[in-house]
Structure formats: structure tokens, C-alpha cells
Image 1 (cartoon, rainbow, N blue to C red):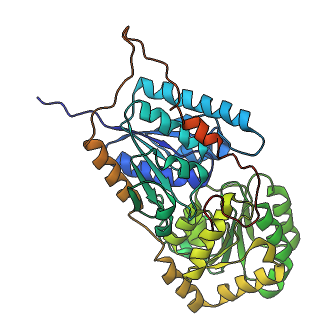
Image 2 (cartoon, helix red, strand yellow):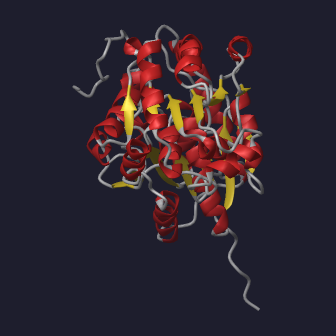
Image 3 (cartoon, rainbow, N blue to C red):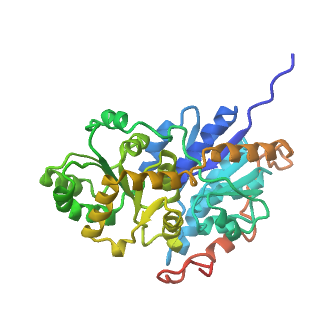
Length: 412
């Protein structure tokens, strides 16, 4: 009787923010459905721990955080080495057939460790402007996937494919009334969803708090779902209580598909993962990019959606309570405007993104030799070092100065 070959092991480095984690989970779900064993490499952050609870049947391994910032080069080198060593030791126990990096410097050490074992390596870049880690990693990996077609030209890799940004299977159009009932809201009244990404957004929180009195006058029927992040929960909840508004206020919500499904209009940051989920459920949105995002990448994400008619772009320095209230109320009361935005959002929805990524990864795995376990002549696994130019090139990317409005190294 012929035994079935063992299931391939795929490691997905996706920790640090929801923007990395949630698309990684979407790909993990697809690969799991195709009989792959999955190891999720995440950060020790609380957002990772909460979100990873949905990773049923997958191994979840936290790695030391790697952060690249001005004036902290020694700390970066120390964190990078610790993360690389942890990934290497993990892979030495069972080398993966593939490693997928979803962005951020925490994803770089597993890619380099995987290459030591002959593992196929991949990356996915969700944002219009690639992050520094992915720009550097692009020439190391076998293949790169991107969310925006225009992003292909920023990555130095001959095998770049536009797949869109993966979203988890539960993100699909839903009945708004049913979602509102599930969340304890009135199914007949419109809902404004306010969200600032997995960590929240103080700028958006403060702006919406200032706008509540105007909403009370112009849209008294409006209900609210407000996801504050961990730091602003108390003051935001107090503001709704003072204004006597019907609102669900939470630091973080795991059932984001219900919140988006319930929304008539959303106010959101412009991280690529949030935009992909907005597009999947077809929610008309007002996008307020995080102004301090690296390379101003959220602005370029939002601009792409705004230019296509899929969203409204409001930069944070231009966001006044009067302008925000006018935009929200106009959309909430104009069904034809919302329908036009929903039609435009269809362009950005990539329901097959996870499948395309899984297809390419498994095709590459099938055509490669088995991965190596590095051993010495005595049979002991050999300690290894980073690729000779790897860490040196990474440290060259430490930002020396910050130019307002410029895109680092891309000439935009």
C-alpha cells in the first residue's frame, strides 16, 4: 500500500499589525484547505494574539519584534538577530517547503532563515507604495505578489504578479439589517462605522468626537459603531454617552465582517487590508490616511480608491467637523451616490487573491528539490550566520531624516 506524501509545511510571517496579519490569515486558510500544514509567525503584540485565535488547526509562533527607526540601529540589529535565530531554530526542527512574508521587518528574518534551508520564498505587498522591508526583500525571494498593479514597478523581482489583497472568507456582501440585529442595533436605522485599523486612530477618534454635536442636529437617526483602539476607549465612550447617541464602542472587534456589513457609511484609515475588506463588503467609505505612515503610503492607497470613485479622500489636516459631517450625512442620505461607490468598489475586490497566491506557491514547491536540513559531519545541526550582505543592506535603510510628503527612495 502506497503511503501519501507528508503535507507540505508553509510558514507565513505576518505579525505586527492587522494589515499584515489578516491577509496572511486569508492565505493560510486557503493553503490549509489544500492540505498544507501552516505555521503563522507573528509578533508578541496583543492584536496578534487576539486575531490568531481564529487560526484553528495552525501552529502560531511569536517571534521577537524587529523595528527599524531613526537612532535605534543597535536595537534593530539585536532584534533582527534574535528574530532570525528564533526562526532558524524553528525551521531546523522541520524545514518548511515555503515561507511567505506579508510585510514589515518582522517578516524579513524568516525569509533569510528559510533560504538557509533551500526553502521557496515569497512576499506579498498590499500597499500601493511598498514598505521598506519588502523593497529590500524583493530581490531575495522567488516570487512577489502585489495588491495594486502599479506596485509591480517598485519591486526588483522578475516574477511579480498582481493578485490583489487577500481577505478572509467571511468578508462578503451581507444583509445590513441582519448584521445590525446581530450587533444589537436597530435594523431600520443607518449606521456610521468608525475604525482606525487594528491599533485605532487618535486623529479620527478626536475628529469624530468633535463632530458628534453636528451629527445630533443633522442626522439624529444615525447609529454608530466606533472601534477606538486600546488608548482612546474611555474618552470616546464618554463622548457618546454625553451626547446620548446610540453607539457600540469597542477597542477592537474580532467580528469585523459584521461591523462592515452593518455600516451604511464608514470612516477609516487607508491601510491596504482595511481597504480590501471595505471593497469585499462594498461599504461606501470616507478615507482619512494616517499622515505619519512610512512613505505616506496610506495617502496613495486612498488616492487610488478616490480617483476611481470607490471612496472619498479627506486628508487629516483638512478634516474639520463641518466637512466630515457634511460628507457623512450626504452619503447616508443619498442612496444613488452610495450605489455608484459600491459599483466602483467592485473593481478593487479580489475574491481570488488567496487562491492565486496559493496556486503560485504550490506550483513552485512542486518543482523544487526537498528542503535541506543543514548538518555538520558529526550529524549536529550547524549554526549559521545571516547572508553576508543581508544585515548590512537592512541597516542602510534606517531613515536618516524625514521629508514631509515625500516617498522614501521612490522619487514620487
